[in-house]
Length: 458
Image 1 (cartoon, helix red, strand yellow):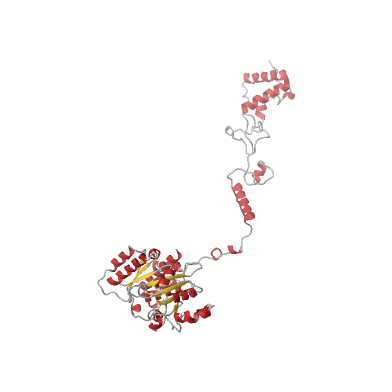
Image 2 (tube, rainbow, N blue to C red):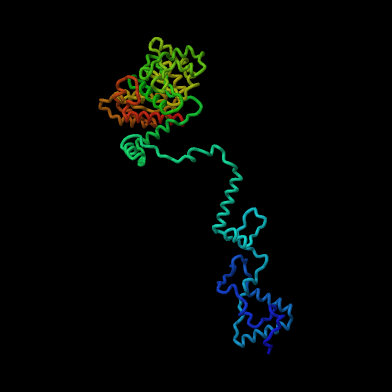
């Protein structure tokens, strides 16, 4: 029977002092044991407790010899016989921790060491992935890295959209405008759908067209359908919305009336510009040959004498348009009646798109459809594909013709058809004033201008 006393020198080396299990504090008491999970924060993986205990026991046995082993076994038998509490199967939390264990904690990129001690991790805001401290640190690092890569912002970054506080535009008119005024701007319900559509059309009209001049002839095979009126309306809307220069040219070999429909007085004609074209080397000199009083649209009139107008041929048209291309972005051509006169060849060769005008009668619609057939027969399918048909009813339509059927016919041949309704101001046959047009007429003309710009920018 072994003695109840044990040599103090053997304590911790295999022998156990009386009451050691009761007096030694166990830091893992009450903590659930999960394989592979550290028992305390900042610890690495704990080795298997039983394997550690066996390894430590073997080592102690080797160092202390057989005597210590027999004493340890006797002490264990004595404890079991006397009913003492068995030795816990799990070593204290400090046991089994190797120096090579990987500590848990977030390591900032670029640091000198690949490890972070628990103390450092706690000071950095937690040290565990997903904590607020690690997230804030990562965001700060990304921000600093981005600043280093991009450098300082350029002056162009200070835009109005970034710096100014957005203010809603007040309504244009109607009860919405009245409500906005009555509440001193505190209640702003915005504009109506009609106003928003109008702004969308104007945005399309103001699109940029590039660096070269675009040519748009207005055609008709029958006189009296309103070809000159459509040319004037189209040119005025384009010039009113766009910021570049727009000019309408009267290329009628006969007596043209484009200058009669436009505000201002024409002191010079296209024929005079042809004769003096070599002396013009600036826009200031060219401005003396066009009229623009009362409108932003520039108009180049034709001769009032029919005998002189016949002399305006294809070469003259090309010379004038070459000169106009230096100073204007869009050139509208009010061509003569028919398709085989002397100016038509150069007109179609330079055309980027065409506007075909038809009236509301049967013969006018048939002639307009035959014009499309004529273009196709002469190899200008490209112009037919981009053609815009205008059914002009501005002078009135007292007949029983079904205009919807005319529109349906032309929609089978071209992509876009625009109907200009009756307008008392246009029926007068005098100078055109956009402010006097009916709202429906103004919307139709604005849509026509937007469609023309769409074709030119396509």
